[in-house]
Each structure stands twice: as C-alpha cells, then as structure tokens.
Length: 235
Image (tube, rainbow, N blue to C red):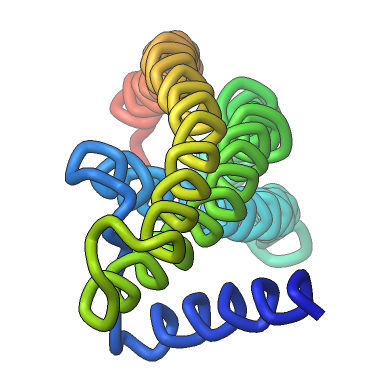
C-alpha cells in the first residue's frame, strides 16, 4: 500500500508538470537548460533530416526531368531543321545538359551520403543515447520532487523535529544521492553529445560543400564549352 501511494504521488507530480501547474524543484537551472537544449537539438535534427531527404528526392526528380529535356533537345528538328549548324547546336546543348544532369545526380547521391544520412544516424545513436539518459534522470527526478513536496507539506503540519518530518528528510537525502549521480551522468552525456555534434557537423558540412563546389565547377565548365561553340555558329 505504501509503494502504491508513493507511485500515485509520483504520477500526480508528473501530471501536474505536464499541465504546467508545477515545475521541478529538484533540477537546477543548468540541468533545466540542458534538457531544453536536448529538446531543441532533437527537433532541429529531425527537421534537417526530413527536409534534407525531401530535397534530395526532389533533386532526383529534377535530374530525371532535365535528362528528358536534354533528349528532347537532341532529337528536336530531326525531320524539319535543314540547317546543319542549328541541328548541331541543338544536339550539343542536349548532350551538355545531359552531362550536367548526370553530374547533378552524382552530386545529389554524394550529398545524401555525406550529410543527410549521417544526420539520421546521429539521431538514432547519439541523440537517442542522450534522450535515454534524460529519461533515466527524469524518473529519479520525479521521485525526488515528490519526496520534496511531501517533506514541504509535512513541515507545514508537524514540528520540525517530529518523527514524520525526520523520516521524510532521511528519505529525501537517500533519493538525492541517487539523483545527484544520475544527473551527473546526464550532464556528462550531454557534454559528449555537444562535443561529438560539433565535430561531426563541421566534417559533414565541409564534405557537403566540396561536393556542391565540384558540381558547380563541372557544370560551369560544360556550359562555357557550349557557349564558346555556339558563339562560332552562324545560323
């Protein structure tokens, strides 16, 4: 019965927090800040991953449409354009556009592998590890908050040296030992998360940037070649 009463009090504490009618007295500002930071990290990583996947999928569709357009340009006028230079110009632009779209497709695949997939993996490993640590801390924290609440109520109704108050003080002290240990573990996990996150993001963004730069240089070179060729044509 005693354990049931404790559990009921913990559920009440958790419900009141979710409703915004009370807040933790156990967690200090630094711990609350770490939890809020984890919430933001989780939300924004999920956003980058989902939007990044969608962007990659749309880019793939765009390259396919670009390749179809390139084929249409190459074949355009086959039966009615008598000027060989115009036919050659159409064919050349179609070929170059096809090459550009193939390069874009390759860049898109490499970008997914260098940035989007690692972001997803980070969610499933490092962020999950931090969330599991937070969940563990929240469980003991709710126990500690519930015990503190009971102690506060007992002090209002009983003498400070009464057995009831002393018993609750001892209970709070015992839970605090476990609470401090688990909170320290959560803090260490968050420190490791931040360090690994910063390291991986810089590496991934650097690789992503190099992939984009290589594509645009290649595309610019292809179009410059076509521009020079078209400049020499006289329709």
